[in-house]
Image (cartoon, rainbow, N blue to C red; front, side, top):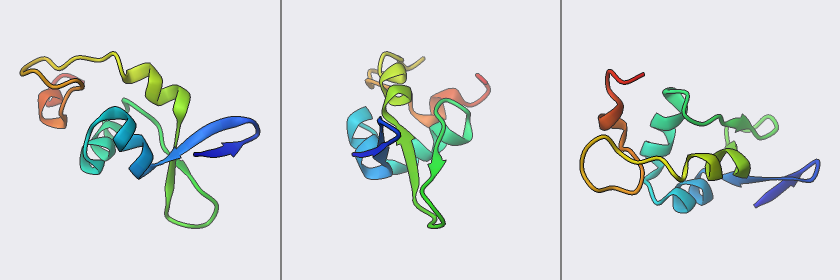
Length: 78
């Protein structure tokens, strides 16, 4: 976890682990506007605000029994 101006941010690996999803699913959430990612300096690495991740932990899929929606569940929903 990285602190930026007192606010905690997580790496992609940490964020995916917190949500219980694969990094590819995390990236799908970003591409669908479910969660924002932030560039870390000039590197390509992205950070995820912990507060945003905690906000979406309560989401449930439209199908199946996964803790969070899979990207495939959202096709046509947004």
